[in-house]
Image 1 (cartoon, rainbow, N blue to C red):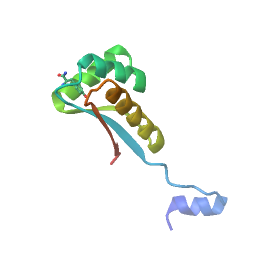
Image 2: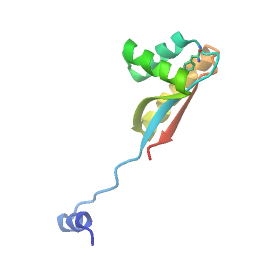
Image 3: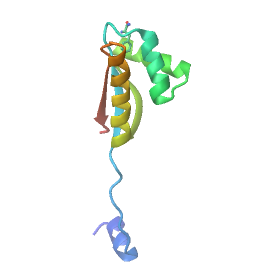
Length: 101
Ligand code: TYC
């Protein structure tokens, strides 16, 4: 029996697996204004202007970029906030979440 499980049984503790983490990513498109993307990154992910510009430019040049990594519910809420802001402004900006490998 592996060491960790043995320890758990001896201590009579319940130790569950750590919750999965999800990357939240922005995808590039040809229409959403750069300034809008930078603003969203600040509002939804709390990024400073400089960091927001960096992520926006990474998305613009590489096709996708990492906004942050979170437990499932927080990741899903941030994706929804981005999409809601984008659609309200009639921009096609896409935001997705992916489980960390
Ligand atoms: N490619 C867009 C433009 O040239 C800018 C952009 C950046 C759009 C990041 C989406 O996730 C995005 N206006």
